[in-house]
Image 1 (cartoon, rainbow, N blue to C red):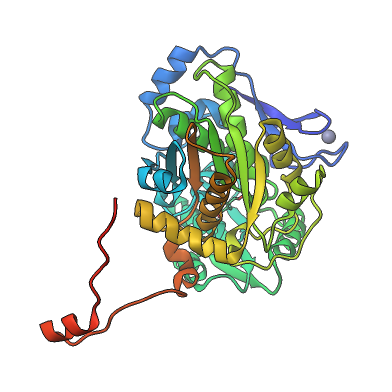
Image 2: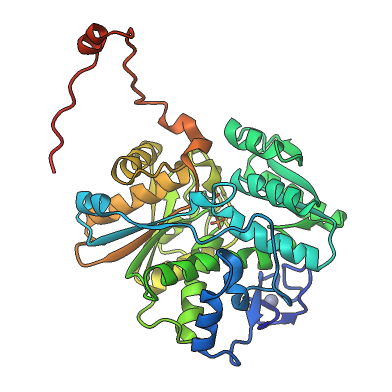
Length: 411
Ligand SMILES: *Cc1c(COP(=O)(O)O)cnc(C)c1O
Ligand SMILES: [Zn+2]
């Protein structure tokens, strides 16, 4: 295995591969490093293609000393070509990476599977997390599958679907009277006090590595090619930046050729600190108090915001924000043109794609991948507005009298 150390992203100080996340010297975040110099592209490619049908096929690029196993392995979710959506927006090629198809119906299964495997390797007997909703589902489920105790901390006002779909796995669910940033602060204090593996606090460097698998799958599923542009949501900014890292690693190793894709980030206007910093030309994000229906993206003080800004700027991309109404419209646009029903985060991403197309930043010459990170059934309230059903008696007369003919579909 190629993993070598933890390294500070700011000052470069190296640390052993333990449950550490912040640099003693400068308080910068730690990141996993690898030595891939001994790998040759052809044999890595063969190993990947002969591997499991999930993220463990990328074990050479994940932070383990031995290949992990899990009962509910995430990954290899569908990458669907969305021609009707592309046509409607005037974009060359749109591909939808549907990560709602993971075991607990969001991309968070990827990061949790990696963090939990690392927690077991390090000898922890309890895992925990601070969650905006989807992480709660994933931690509870993967802990249940592994037979390890778990504590899940969430803002108490989360969507009911996400709360119910967490508790069912037998975790200890704690609803905190506060927003995600309050929950996160509490969990940072608890991580120092209890001997638990907080997947996104003291195991955050390992957790973050799981998101790189989205980049690897994109390359494989496009036939070992890179897209021209990507559109992805930003909460803490970890997913966004790690997709970039995944593309870089495979380009450096010669597994894929071509330019780094242009990175377009997507946030909700009701919690868009990274989009605001992008618009103002700032390098750091001013914290905000979230107020949006996109609760899974509602992080007011994003840890990886500065790195997300770097990636968008260095690739010639952008970071946009969209209103709650645009999010609802984005959910419907995706559903009506692709048959994929996404949660509010995917509404943010789709609405941002539409905005970029309208502005002409993404056009007829582009191959774009759009990352849909969660399932629509988890945020049903977002589609209640505009819901229509024709209620009739069980007779032909009642049908004819009450249900209008559909207008002919024009191609
Ligand atoms: C957590 C989450 C994200 C992105 O999270 P980051 O903190 O930016 O890595 C995106 N979409 C959904 C649905 C999520 O739950
Ligand atoms: Zn440092």
